[in-house]
Structures are given as C-alpha cells and as structure tokens.
Length: 227
Ligand code: 6PG
Image (tube, rainbow, N blue to C red):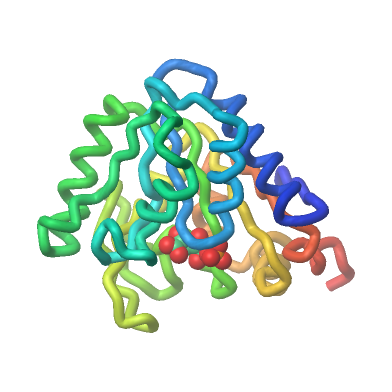
C-alpha cells in the first residue's frame, strides 16, 4: 500500500497538487474531485501553480443535494478554489432537474460523454471519520450498487440526499488518491489501513488497481503503532 505522509496540511496540498499536475500532462485526462474541506487547499495550490487543465474534464466524485451556488456544494467549493483560469471543463450534476435520482442518471450520461467512455484517469477521495468516502456512507444503499456509475444515495444518519459515484466507477480509475488530514481521522485510518476493516474507503481502495494515500502527520499519527 502506497502511503505518503507529509508534515502538515500545506505540505500535503502542495504534494497532491504536484502529483495531479504531473498526471494531467496528457491528452484526455480527467480528474474526479473530492468533496469536503480537506481538498480545498489542494485545489487552491493547483490554481497557485497555474496548472493547465485545457482539454481535461473535471468532475465531482460526489455532490450534496443542494443548489449549485450553495456553500455546501462540492462543485461550488471546487469552482471557488480552482478559479476559472484552469482551462478544464468542470462537469457538475444538474440540480435544476429537481429529483436526486433523475439528476444522478443525467450526470452519469454526461460523464460518459465527457470521458468518452474511458475510465477516469485520476480520482481524488477524502475519508470521513466514520470511514465513508465520496457519499458512500456505511450502511447506505449506494455501497451495494454494481451496475451503475453514479447514483442518488439517501443518507439516513444525516437525513439528506447525496449524489455519488459508485464503488466500481471510483475503483475503475487509473489512479485513486486519498487525501486525509487531521487528528480526527487518525483512529479511522488505523482501522481502515492497518486493520483492514471494510469501511467504504477501504472497500474502494481494495477494489481499485492503483491507490495512493496522501496523509498529513496528524491523520497518520496512529499508523505503525503496535496494535
Ligand atoms: C463530501 C465528501 C466526503 C469527504 C469526507 C471528508 O461531500 O463531504 O465527498 O466524502 O471527502 O467527508 O471530508 P473533510 O475533508 O471535510 O473531512
């Protein structure tokens, strides 16, 4: 397992941005964007480094069921942090369709078109302290979907709809990069990485062919300790 540990969140963001920049330097590149707060520093670093995504497709590994300009929208966060000069095409779900599953199905088709039927090149993922990744939360139905690439997922614990890529779609990427930072993730990382407990982030990592875990020291603080 390829685990890379960085002193702090800034070093993590810089290393992640440089890895993405290196991977992006090819035709037909696509980048699945992680949601949540951790990757924001990476997106801002990509903008600072003026990484050129011309000819590339950027898409959302998952999205909250909110308006596209809502502060909780992953697409909104990505647009804000990446800026508008990167040259890439950011493909996001169409919230105006009004129903989560309708929007997920339409997004699935839009991604097929945008990716030209190819597997994703690079997918960024985060991990929640409950072991979820994208919007694949423990015990939710989307975790068991194998015949779709993108679905709506009811998250009972949060009483919200989410749109999410499925395990097989995420795992089909040429490269999956988990970005995990902060002390609050240390315990779950120990369970997922060292004990191999089948939380959604572990399920995706095991299904993928090429995975890199990029962690800051705080998140990695419980790795390598005697169990
Ligand atoms: C989301 C994300 C989710 C996120 C984790 C970690 O929409 O919230 O896709 O999977 O990556 O919850 O979030 P933080 O980086 O904010 O801890």
